[in-house]
Amino acid sequence: MLAFLRCPACGGKLEPLGREGGREFPLGPFRCLSCAHTFPLRHGLPDFRLRECFAPSNRLFRALYDLYAPLYDRLENALAKLMWPDFSEVELREEIAACLERLRPE
Ligand SMILES: [Zn+2]
Image (tube, rainbow, N blue to C red; front, side, top):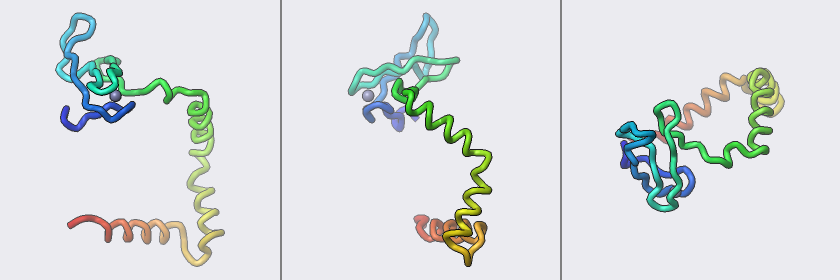
């Protein structure tokens, strides 16, 4: 698994530091071998969140998405009827799923 982990800041390989606060952890905390960004443990798990994820603009979009989430199905269904009146929303989903299925490697 470690071979697949990459730094979310730059994509560099991560080095497990193995120890934090005098305790040993086989999978973290981590340090990026390219940019030296460190990812501490949070509740025993590596915390890969970047500071820019908490920028005010991202918090605003999160609030907007949270407001929109309860209305998502009804509004998207109404929008689909406006744009493609000959298809139901279910038919559109099935058509998209069929297109994706054709792209699946064998
Ligand atoms: Zn990095």
